[in-house]
Image 1 (spheres, rainbow, N blue to C red):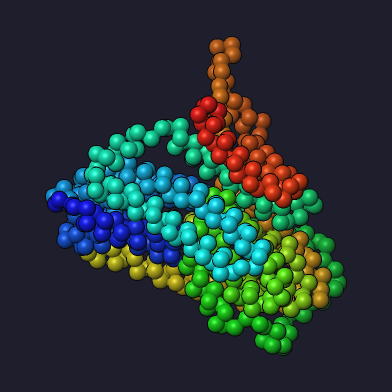
Image 2 (cartoon, rainbow, N blue to C red):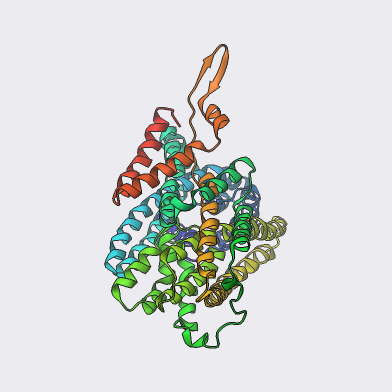
Length: 527
């Protein structure tokens, strides 16, 4: 099949539109190879080749998931472009399968650029948030959609139009130090977000719990979910030991005026649900999904805070570091709206309480999203669908996509509504009692322990320097690990925290420092 420029453009536009869903509009899984390959094959008139290539690439990348801050080769575009090459070469699946890895590597490199570009958008949005300019904030957020579309269209068009040889040559021509340097930078940038998160919590008083979370992740290799549950247990134990008679006498039933005290309606929550499908549109290496989370809350916050100054403070508060699986993010949206509603009504809910609650919830809910929804649920149906597709059965893609779409819809919808309901009940029970202080303390404990673990999981930096002494090779990173594993990530994060506390504008030169460390460090073979 001879693909001309018009065909190449049309196919690239379709692929870019399909691929953008992965970050831009909803995370529907329609770009996964097992579904997108057959879809593209159907469009190009060769469904069977699409089924085989899509299923084969899906199985190749089955255990390669972009969880947290990892950036593995992109399975989605590898399956799509691989399908195009297989069909264009006369229906030869082996051609597309063989080219999947270099295509995936090139695409992921450009996606990394989009993540870095979105850092610029986040800082533009910071200025608009300070001004309370909601429209500009929303437009800036959706520029991330354009960025992802462009970085999907460019490699697709170049690969399709110029062919497989060009793709391989381009990947090989890129300086190794430059690509590796950007990967190092991507590992360092989350330290800024972690530092900003620590700044929002009472780190000076509760620093020991940050240390506990860090140690549990480093030495016992506990995941974030386990550490969050352990933190919850510690917070509950402290409360049980120190609770007063007043807290024991808090009523078990909710006040009868609960419905009268609510400001937000079902319509307001439904708006947050719809907006949550764009929670990853401006995802970036510094604060991850911060702007998308803020975007989801904007209409509700506008209603809760008619005073412009209060509104500005609220939207700035929700522009801090945020990272969670998109399917479980909505539970945090619901709880955050419940807390904001009580704060707007004059209840003793501090900004610190809201930030600590978000930090405490994002860890365990991320764990559920990544391990249960992504690594387990998606993988099971992908395996079933791929198995059928390899046999040429067109029902395979359907079996994969239907459960994933239903999971997406139900988890987001019920997450917002039940999160909000739970949050209201929790705060109303704590009203006029010592439980509120205990809740703030507990949320901070869990939040700091989770953040301590996230430093280990998200901040990636290691030294490669080594030398010989007495006939024995000494590796500097191994020497540091023998003293304290994870020492560099925690020092970097705490150093960034110190800079942010000393200077409000430190964020700008810290960003530059991250790129200098990554690129220069790789060029000089330091990292």
